[in-house]
Image (cartoon, rainbow, N blue to C red; front, side, top):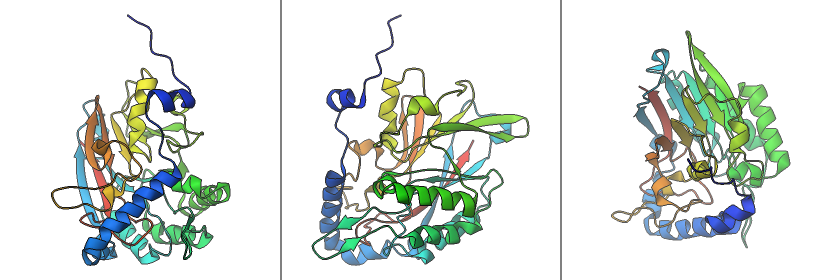
Length: 313
């Protein structure tokens, strides 16, 4: 047997693999989304209405799933982007949709707010604690028996350390959220257990898959929370690590999806394979939600907001 490939540094990966998308590139892509959206502005705006939020039921088969966890329901809410463009009523509607399903577990997969965006007219998404408080108020209806677990997204980090600290502290105190910042926990049902793992955003220096997988049992079901679905690419640099299921957001499903063409831009990812839905990659199943909110402008086209209900079978 040959030796495992060395784990390259972030600088080496940027050369060997593909460069990470920076803020400017991300915003250029979103500007393109905005331009294309103008073609269908009426339909696009309607897709951001609170009454347009869809509940997506996603059964996921996991071969080694313990018997006690068959039928276990996980509500996933992601990419809330609470801001002047995403109202508390919109957030409340998404929380109510999830709560009505009586999930066993709730997971929040990042981008709770939007970092500051400057235009020649104004500033948008400038950090304001009120938008974090709006989430706590709206999500107070969520009281799953196995708790609420969360990871941070790129926009949470881009909003600065004051914002990330306020998000984590306020969610913990107001909602009892358990943060999975490169760490793992066990969930128990009867005498059976599964593992829930979370990582910081893929684009951050604090991201560490190796740290998150410390003490992970490879023989026990592993569910990974990662805001960015391209975390899949990191497994090639981390031999021996994997997950049966990864729950992600980040892409908004494209936010703008054109008939017969699909999303003309890939918001924040390089690989169209990870734009949305359930994807299999080398034995790992990844579900990428379209998310609850929207970014830059209040437009979605053929891509309604989503609350996801994962059922393990």
